[in-house]
Amino acid sequence: MILPTIFPQLSNNYTPVQILDSETFAVLFSSSNPMRLSVIDEKRVTRFPVESGEERSDHVVTNAIEINIEFVLAGSDAREQFRSIRQAFLDHRLITVQSRMATYEDMIIEAMPHEETRDVYDGAVVPVRLVQWRAIEPEYGELQQEMVDDPAQSSTVQRGRQEGQEVPAGGETERQGSTLSSWGLI
Image 1 (cartoon, rainbow, N blue to C red):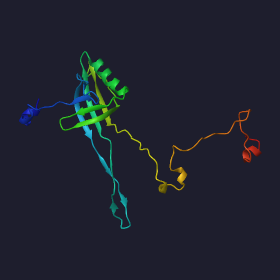
Image 2 (cartoon, one colour):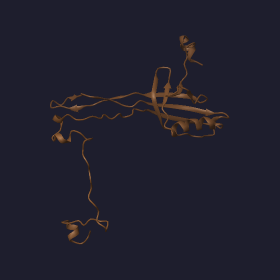
Image 3 (tube, rainbow, N blue to C red):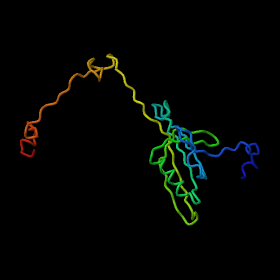
Image 4 (cartoon, one colour):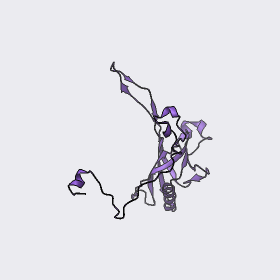
């Protein structure tokens, strides 16, 4: 390994990339070898022109973190390693990725294409793309009566009894006054 020769202070504290289950923190894909890891952590600044022709910004949108990990699956248990990654993908399992620089929680496998070649005769290279999972949490509550035009509409719970109209025995209602019905098309 060349890293400790360049940075001798890292030789004792070298931490490999770990893929963990977000709930139990159990190590997943322990026999898989991550060859490369890249993290995309971006923000998007809104820009709009003003009367003077300048661009102004007033808002920042934080994009979901995206991690690309390239696994080399090789050896007699390569098929089992692939099955383990695929099962986490199919189960929508939330994953924690611990790299040397940071820990990324609540990641979900978005894609896991793989390629089998003669160069890796006893396995495959599997590039896995993970995306940060940020669940939407809806807010419920009553609107203040000042916030709606009709105060009776401030609560969606107290709507009273709702009833529909009975359908005639023929099963269809006759459409009256329609241009198409006057022509006999419907």
